[in-house]
Image (cartoon, rainbow, N blue to C red; front, side, top):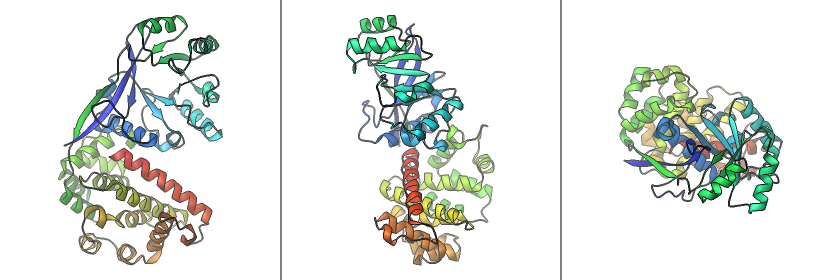
Length: 400
């Protein structure tokens, strides 16, 4: 069994009632985040809260504050959780420019509550103040005079004020007298850690599933049976389709319904990623590289308006499956019902799919001069590759 963790720091109102929880990435029960970058931390918080543990089990009926990185703010498809229960918390290192202003405005229009973390009138993210509903002042980062000055500036503004890192009850009472609405700090309550168990994946079931997923003759009933062979995978698929991440608005209680409502291609790609990425002895870097190749190959096909773009995704994804699973590609292809074009692309880098894979490999090893695909410009190739890298990093962090 594999452990999943999430930290939650309570936020109190003036009556000392819990108003919300700030959700924090934690790698263990010792209340430490560990060495993980901000995008990865946000991804894992979202997946653990919405899929692995369940938001109701983490915050109940209260609000959830989730830290947003620049990448998340600029990627609309990642913002697929309910605005009525989630507060988007923006740090002052997000890098405010026209793109960020436009993104935050769009999220505000969609109904999200916006909180500016570490707010000061001269902070880097202060230009986002007109979009904010809540500002969080750091009680430890400002001296008393500077803090009181900021609070006076905020008086009468249409915004709620929250003080974080409040260390004493006396300090909390003084801040309340100066207009603070919400409070967070060790004098009130420390962050705790919520955890659950994740079942390990079955490698043999994954191999059979990968074969059948790519067989157009495999029906819904057969896919349902194959996914159900692995308790870990079937559980995670159902959690995924019933989370805001799937985009569905109705409850799904069977794999059969998941395939029907999401569509074969969507469920195919997600199951493929969930299956491969959650093998117990997988090397995460290999999965990420395979995802970059899959995304880029598919993007090249769509850029050039080629048919069967999903088969380009398959070529990229399976180009490293021998290293990931530990089975030779030749023997693996004997049991996978791939077309001759896909097999030739994988074994010989032949055809348009093979050319897309070759292009991906050239960019991967830092040789952009050798990266060519049809009439796609080198500038556009660089853009597509960067997008593939970002997508793969976020997706890998989300599904682990």
